Amino acid sequence: MGRDQEVLVLYNNNPYARGPEFRERETADFRRRLAAEGITELAYATFPLEGDEAAGYTYAMLLDASEDKVGWVIDEMQPIVAATMETLRRATQ
Image (cartoon, rainbow, N blue to C red; front, side, top):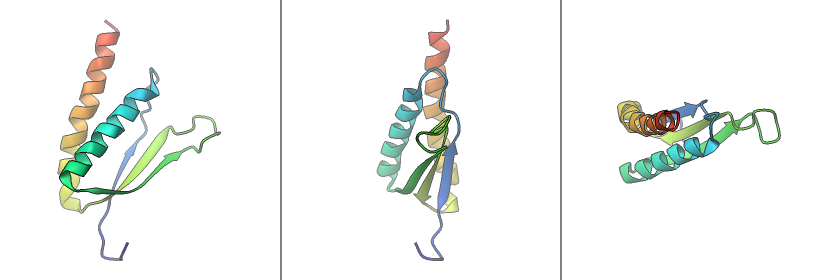
């Protein structure tokens, strides 16, 4: 990565108490959308580290994208998260 390269960082600190599979599905869906848009995921990390209390609570995803893609990221993530929230809402009715 050169000094002139722009990157975006997406972080998530909502692992869903009712099931980590929800965030895993969201991440997989977002990765499919990234690929379709031609955006490369440069790195992905979770914290706290595996073995620690609350391991993986937060993730950060580093994207090879410039600031002009911020709106696209928001526009793509909002419906992904909204779909999860709707699933959880229906499960509690």
